[in-house]
Image (tube, rainbow, N blue to C red):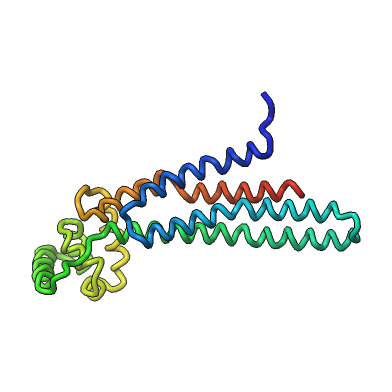
Length: 227
């Protein structure tokens, strides 16, 4: 069996990554414009990543073939072009991972319940929440952990309002994580909450971080042609 060509090897690296990104993109419908915008940023970054290595390799090859210019000059241009590529590749990698974090954060925010819009209802919800918490012994953190995930309006006050920030302080991130875990395993909620829940599951299955690694590997493989 013949060895795969260079182009076939690159396609084997990037093809599955692009397929996974396509699955993730399709799952983001209904999750909000911020999430979709972040996904488009991710696509753009990953589309550019292999090209950094490919463009650098082409420039280096062209420089090497310019016999009309002094050898030392050509070597200096080659070093400069390689240095630019080797700087850009990790930068794009970092930008892609940061964008994945934005997508996940947006989906988690969409998954979490929101407080009631009516101020009177919110007051009643807080009274109910305080009574529910008082039924459990321990610290405020212990009390909140005993009630989180039981009632969407309670959770909205705890994780998505100034009220929650005021009573939880530095413990708010831990309670948000608890709420995300509980709402991930539920089946109810608004349309956006349900869309975000499904998209989070797809995000975990498609592993976009693996797609980033594949695109970076492709960029470096392109650059290796002119080592």
